Figure 1 (tube, helix red, strand yellow):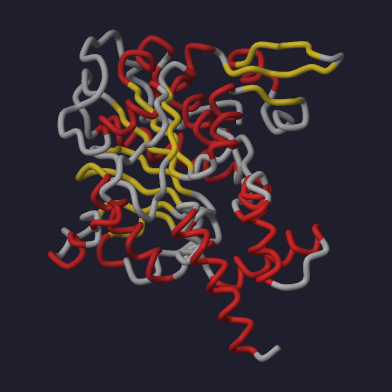
Figure 2 (cartoon, one colour):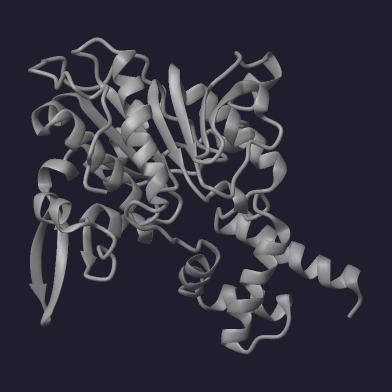
Length: 336
């Protein structure tokens, strides 16, 4: 088979996924997608894209297996520990300095996978603010395109291996033990979980959150092509408060978006909101006719809340304020 014929077969497969299953893989780097397809086809002993397309049409459950292959979700608590220490000791104090004592604090964990990074920032904020201030002021949005990963994230239940990088102090303070089938699991404390809203969200298509103080998106953008990355960064700029911060993965860069973000720390991939968007950049946020569907398609309360708050201009959260710790300007020992 010629290279052209092979590409045509692959395009037909991508087109079926996009038009019939509402799964647009054209936004991802082509070589990455090809590798994932070949891996899945090898498992099934299928040699051609045409044969795999027929298999996909005749076996509806195959789409779930393909999704698990394409959307590889890897996350861990306090991944890149030094970077989280920088967030705790430098970035969170800056966010609090820029706010009145009663103002809410909003965080968006974009591409949250199975929830570890969303819970990590929740732990940091609870440690710095104290649990009462955390409950009164913090709202965390955690979104992902993978619904199976979101299901695990909502449960907040992890095995011993998954919590191995959490020190005993934080593990005892913020997790409850659960025994099931002779195995020990750790469940995130309810008070932390209740301030996190998990929802299905496509970074390249759906409306961004708004008035975000800290946007965490780590090792997600590396799978997107250059054009899609640019569009996502524009959405991130729109999402952030004037004094907001962007926290990327250690292998990611801003590509062509350096003008709308300013570098805070290259080692830890921390950026601040930069110049205003141009008219052309603003147009990247506006949904096309194809994108006029609801941001969230699920009927769950959490996802409905995500949809309602995506472009909400008013501040989120309770306005009541209690005694805020006054010593956070000094280096914080969070037992990382």
